[in-house]
Length: 396
Length: 219
Image (cartoon, rainbow over all chains, first blue to last red):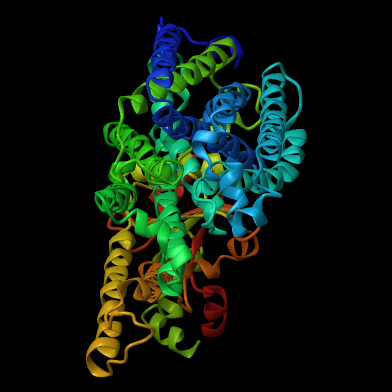
C-alpha cells in the first residue's frame, strides 16, 4: 500500500469553493460588524463555537483512537486528525471574540463588576487580560497536541514506526484535553451569564462537540469516497461503527443535559433556575423543545435500528441533521444571554442574517484549511501497521 | 455408565463380531460410526476457520458449529447466521422497564400515597426520570445477558464436544475447530470425514461416547 494510491484522484473544486464562500462570508460579516456590532459578536460566537466544536471533537477522536489502540477507525483516522489540525486557524479566528469581549461578556464591564459582589469575587478569573491569555493557552495546548499527532501520522505514512509514540502522547494529552475543553467551555460559553454556574457544563459542550464531529466525519468521508480510493477501504462496516458511536453519544449528550437540568430543577434555587427560565419564555421554550426532540428523540429512534446505521442514505441524512442540531444547541446556549449585555433589547429569538454570514464565513475558511491539508497527504494512514485489519472490519 | 450400556445392548458383542467379520473392519470402528454424535476437525488459524465455515455452509450443512478461543469478525456471515433476535427482545424489555417505572412512581407518589415534597407536583416527571432510566437500563442489561444465554441454550451440563480430548485441551487456548453434528439432515460420518479432509481439516475425529470402555466391559 502506498500513500500515492490514496491521494485525491477525482477533480474537486471543494477547496476553491470553500475559500470563495468563506471570503464572501467574512466580507458580509465585516459589513454586519459595521451595521450592527452587538448582533455580530453574538452571531460570530455561535458560528465560531460550532466549527471549534468540530475541530475539538476531531482532536478527541484522534486521542481516544490512539489511547484505546482502536483498529476499526484506522482507515478514517486521517479525517479527524485533519479536522484537529485546523485548530491554529481557529486561534486566529478567535481574535474577533477578544476584540468584541465588551459586547459579549458582562464581566468585562468594569462598572458592572464594581457594583456586583459576585462579579467582584469572580474577577480574579473573569477579567479581560486573563481571559485572553487563557484562551491562547488552550489554543497552544490543542495545537501542540493536534500537530504532534498529525505530524507523527504523516511520518507513519513514510514508514516510520510511531505507533507507540502516538499512544504515549495521547495518554497525558487526554487529561490535558479534558481539563482545557472544560475550562474553555466555562470561559467562552458559561461566562456569558456570569452569575450562573454549572459544573457539568464543560462535559455538556464536549458531548455536543464529539457528537458533531462524528457526523462531520461521516459527511466528509462520504464526499471523499467519490474523489479518492477511500471508498475501496472504507466500507459500510465503518459507517455502522460510526453510527453506533453517534447513537451512543446521542444518549450521552441527553444524559449530561438532563443531569444538568434535573439538579437545577430539583434544587430550585433562583440563581440557578434563571438560566432555564430564560430558555423557557419569549419563544425560547419552542427552541428548547425542538432541541430535546431533535437532539435526542429523533436521532435515538432512527439510529437504534441496525439497518439505519448500515444505510449510506440514512447516515447521510442523520449526519446532516446532527450538524443542524449542534447549531441549534449552541444558538440555544448563547443567544438567550443577548439581553444580559443589551438590557434594552427584546427577549425573543434574535435570529439575524448575521448568523448565516458568520457561519459560512468561518465554516468556509475552516473547510478550506481542512481541504488543503487533506489534499496534501494521503486520505488514509497507509503506514499504520494494522491498516489491513481495519480495512477488513466486520461487525458481528 | 449403566444407562449407556443399556443403549448399546442392541449391539451385542456377538453381533458386532459378526459385522466385523463380514466387513473386515474392527468392531469398535463400526460401533463408533454408528454411535457418532458428530465429526470435529481442527484448523490452523482463524482465517482458515473462517474459510472452512463458509465451505461448510456452502456444502449445505446447517447444524454445525465453529469454536475459537476468541471472537472472529465476519464469522456470522461466513456461517450464514441470521441476525440475532436479541436486540428486539432487549428493546421490549427496556420498554417494559421504562413504562413500568413510570407507572410505579405515578401510582406510589401521585395516587396511593400523595405527599407534596418541596413544592414539586405529585407526578414530578423530571424527578422520576432517573428511576425510569435505571429500570430501563437494568431490565435491558439483565435481558441481554439472560437472553443471550437462553438463545445459546446455555448453561448446559452435557455437550458431545466434551468427549474429544483434543478439543477439550485446546479449544480455550489455541485451537480452531469446526464440527458438524449428527442432527444435521445431511450428516453421514464418512462423507463428513472426507469433506473435512478436502477442506484442509486436521486431527479429524468422530465424536462419540467412550465406547472403547463400554466395549471392553461387554467383552
